[in-house]
Amino acid sequence: MKSLAILCSLIVTLTACQSGGGGSDVSWEPGHGKISMEVIPNPIVARAVRGNVYDFPVEIVVRENGGHAVNVTGVSLTVLGPVGLVFHRESWDAEKIRALGYSTTVAANGELRYRFVPRQEVPDERLFGGVVAELRVEAIDAAAKVTSATTSVTVSR
Picture 1 (cartoon, rainbow, N blue to C red):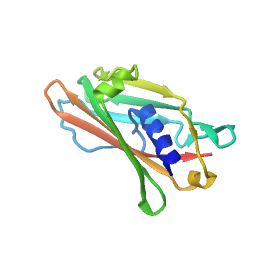
Picture 2 (picture 1 turned 30 degrees about the vertical axis):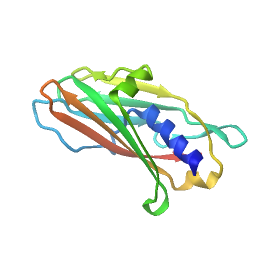
Picture 3 (picture 1 turned 90 degrees about the vertical axis):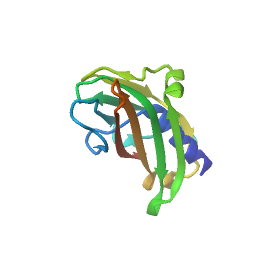
Picture 4 (picture 1 turned 45 degrees about the vertical axis):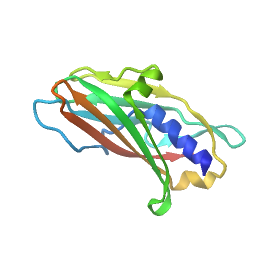
């Protein structure tokens, strides 16, 4: 299970975001920044490297849809297994995201793209059958109004 937690951590690191099709805005008012996110591909497809080691290539797109620039303040990931069992939780604040070399500022009606190819050991292939990663990104606009988006994505082999 520790390897799964690390994998999920990598997915979030990659993710500094995701929404779009299945995402939802939980807090937005007209006249303020509004974010959405998308994960490409969805589901994330694991690629065998050797033995139990896999690459998880993914692109995360964060979009501002409200016409006002926003700054990403945090990204979080919760990995759920069968029957909603929580395998792992992790979060990244803006400082950690910038330390990874990414901008946290999304221009009005703009987007940020994060590309990752994390490599991780997965000790049991059956874990691919029931794992869902819930991703959440939060941002704030110049008027200090918070906007957020949440989505779920599966991982397959």
